[in-house]
Image (tube, rainbow, N blue to C red):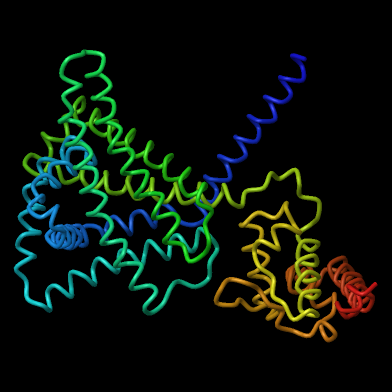
Length: 409
């Protein structure tokens, strides 16, 4: 019994280790650090427009009108490290100045906010291996909804905190006061979870399972809160940077914090996508060429029925195939002009396999394998080149079979 338990525990630890490595590899493959840096740069220009839009939306809600001061304090207290209060006055002053702009200025502020949201959607679509972003009205409505719902969530959090603080039952018992403090501290995490989950579910141009979106949102919210606490400790116990930067000491910390926040958002997105698509490598039973053949056979069979192949159907038929594997194979097939992608994400076969041979497919998958490129006039080199070319010729002659015939055997 203990041996069985240890074996099971070892397998679970190995699975978790593989999963974490997969997350790290995906984050690096999708240029996570580079994207976070780009979003940090964009956020420097977008933070004031977003605050301006937020305050404007608050003014449109009767119950939240005049709550700008509470929102500012709540935002900088719970979602920024210790240096947040130094920047609060400047950012609020800038946003109030922005509210006095002409109509052209307002349009520019809105465009800046939309640019940042489009970059986020593009990054999420890359993580989810979606080839096309939303266009036209659907994209505009999504961005407007995201800009609008943020202030509403913040207003709800303030109302919830005010309600918990006003309950008289908390005044009489010390143990209950501890509960009150815990609940008040939990509100920002709940708000962050809702915000992250909404982003993971709504932004990618594909269907994301609700439970995976919420799980990723919760993990991202916890990471966000832990990172904020660590940043506060760093600022408190290592004040040396204040001697270097003086009055501008809050600026580098603010930049680092924005970068960390974007990184957490992107890591959470990788986690949600992995929860949906990650497969343990032990299920893999075929080579890369074998995977491509299986994909083409599935596409060919569905083409005969006049149907396309969805990612869900592909995952069901090839459970060992990871999103990174599929992305690589799709690129090979696309460059060979064998497949085309529909707007909804389904894949169609775009060539007649009666006129496409196995030899052509091998050449498309492994173009370097049929080239020796052994240069020189030495006798042994000439001999090897001759033998190699004879072998390639023999192989191509044997493999000169249409894929439709291969799949019909």
